[in-house]
Amino acid sequence: MIEQWCASAWSRGRPAAAKALARMRGVRPGVWIALMVALGVAGRVSRATYQRHAAHRNEIADAIGSVGFFYGPPQPDHTGARVLYLRTSEKGMGLYACDVASKKTTCLQDWKPAGGSSMRGQGLLPLSPDGKFLPLVVSIAAARGALAICEADSGNELIRIRAPDWVVTEGVWLTPEKLAWLRKSRAGALELHLAERRPNGSWADKAVPMAPGNVSCLTALSDDTVAWMDAQGLYALNLASNAVSTLFSPEGRRIAEMSYSRERRQFLVTCGEKGGWSLWRLELRTNAPCDFSRLASDKYLGQAQWINDARGYAYTPSLFWRLGRDKTRPCRNYR
Image (cartoon, rainbow, N blue to C red):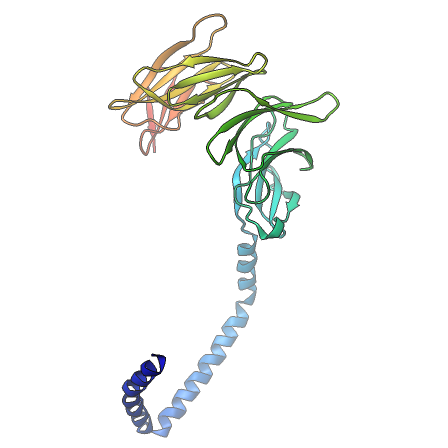
């Protein structure tokens, strides 16, 4: 088959090659000399240009070489003076700390993937409220999944909680020494854990009995209570008594997002309903039913957040930012 194809190509190309050679023989020698001189001059100019821009090329190469891939979102400390993040490094992946004022970056730790495995899926959870501890999500793609709690100043690992074949999805600090975190199996099962620092400085982790279902937006309500949401409502779990309560269950609506202000004990809840979306304020009360009221309605509502210590709120209707204040209807639009 190959021999036939080669023979056919030769039979078609041979006449064309013969014609091209005949034309080249008809070109005068002076033309060939002029072409050779032009090629020589062009080569010399190209070489000089290449050498003249060598320093500029090196700068570009250094800049490109310093760009790395980030793993998960950066995490600021409680003061906002320092930001920690995961990024590719010479070994594989590094934990970096950037001082916001001086813009100085320091590599705290450097990891090399085992056996050339992928580092995708790594990430950082928020720092502890006092900025001392940093939860590091270890991806099952790079190792047998785990959650490592590290010192925020040095990156040194204090405890590694093994979670083989599980993916760490969320985490929230109840106190500076108590972390509630969720892990998800490949089958979709969710499990809530509580990692706590003991008085002697060691860490302990335990699974918390619950049937969370489709959990998202894990939130700390107090030192011993966490809340979460699914499409049907908002729920709270007291970790001391393992008692689960329903905080909010909207009729005829589905919950899409929530934001919580721990200082004012108020939720900002986004609900989808027939014909559009609505935004609700839910205030927690001690020894009394929760108070909830509608703040806004729109054809679309998304990414709603409390602002100014929960004295106002912001959300995105389509391509605009819309702001509200004093819990009244939205008052200004920003592109």
